[in-house]
Structure formats: structure tokens, C-alpha cells
Image: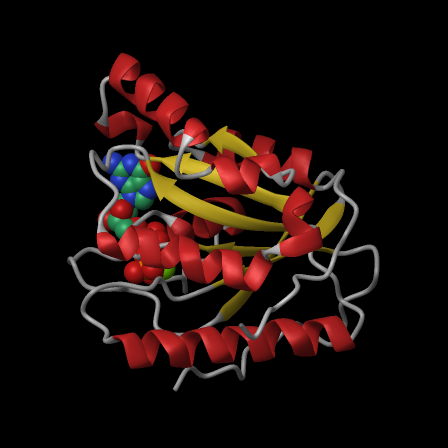
Amino acid sequence: MVDLSGSINEETTPSDIIIAVMGPTGTGKSSFIKSVTGDETIQIGSSLNSSTQEFGVYSAVIDGRRVEFVDTPGFEDTRDENSDADILQELAAFLMQTYHDRKLFNAVIYMHRISDPRLGKITKRNLRLFTKICGGTSLQNVVIVTTFWDSVNGVVGATREDELRATFFKPLLDGGARIVRLDRGVLSARKIISDITKNQPRACNYSKN
Ligand SMILES: Nc1nc2c(ncn2[C@@H]2O[C@H](COP(=O)(O)OP(=O)(O)OP(=O)(O)O)[C@@H](O)[C@H]2O)c(=O)[nH]1
Ligand SMILES: [Mg+2]
């Protein structure tokens, strides 16, 4: 089971910004959080297996406001469907607890590797689970962040991005989500967060179906 002991800091105030980061394993979720928080305790994956096994909450001060990041374990094919369901359940509990404490999310980030030439079963399953958690009214605070732009030819990446907008991510984008590019380095990450801080906080609605 996923350890939720690192839940949102009790000192969190309504002016704090909370950003949950989700998506398939190896898409750069922890790297993104590490680059903006500078927290050396964050484990970055180096093998093909999933690196983050537990939820983690890390904070940074950005534009004078405290931002808390919720790092999540990515769903991947070395786990079976049952443990995916476990993670989903734990994540739902975590989000609901957060909601009950009136700590709303300014954004939920969904990370996607632009270098992936095909959308495999795992990627599709991730998006399905993500939509299940964050469907409905909260889509305006969903930000799809594409990573690994350094690993793809610019034209190929841009064509793929257009295709993703028109197909895979269309339901999210039609519901009000945005899609942005993340380049390596802290500047690009900080720019994304600065834009997010303008969002109205919303609860992440978990649908049980
Ligand atoms: N080339 C390239 N590598 C990246 C990028 N972002 C992350 N990585 C690398 O990708 C690997 C996985 O990164 P993580 O940040 O651990 O990915 P994660 O999404 O947290 O993965 P899980 O914790 O397993 O869900 C690491 O070796 C990172 O250095 C990127 O934009 N470009
Ligand atoms: Mg990780």
C-alpha cells in the first residue's frame, strides 16, 4: 500500500498553492519538482522501473508565495492492475482528505513524454485513471505538461503535439485543460508554476465509477 504519512503540511494556509503532479512512470514528475524545490531528498529514476513509490509533499517559495507539490507514483507495467487500483484508491483518499481540510488544488499537472512515438497501453491506462480522478468540473485546473523535448526533433515534436491535441488529449482540452511545454532547467518549470498561481483553487473530484 502507498504510505500517505507525508500528507499536506498542517501549517498550510488558504493562500498557499497546491499542485499535484501525476502521469506515467519516467515522464519527469519528480525531476520537475526537484528542479523547482531544490529538495535533494527527491529520488529521480535511473532505471526502467518506477522510481517514486509513495506520495510526497515538497515545498518552495515562488513569486513570494509558498507552493506545495504533491509527487505521486506513476502507473507502470511492472505493477499489476490490482496495485494500480490500490494507488488510485490511496490517491482518491488523499485528495478527499485534502478537500475535507479545505485545501484545494490550484492545479493538477499531467506529465507526458513528447518523445514517445506511440501511445502504449500503459499511457492510455494512465490517462483513463487520471480522467477518473480529475474529470468533471476541475478540468480548468488541469495542465498537461509535455517533457523530453530535448530528446525529439523539434518538427517531429510539434507535429506530435498537434496530433495529441486533436486526439488523445482532446477530451481534457475541450473541458478546459491547457497544454504546455517543459524544457529542461528551472526557468521553464518556474514559468509554468507562475502561470498556475493565477488559477482559482478547485477540488479534484474523484468519481467512483
Ligand atoms: N532527456 C530528458 N530526460 C528527462 C527529462 N525529464 C526527466 N528526465 C529523466 O527521466 C528519468 C525519470 O525521471 P523521474 O523524474 O524520476 O520520472 P517520474 O515521472 O518521477 O517517474 P516515477 O517516479 O517512476 O513515476 C530520469 O533519469 C530523469 O533524469 C527531460 O525533459 N528530458
Ligand atoms: Mg517520481
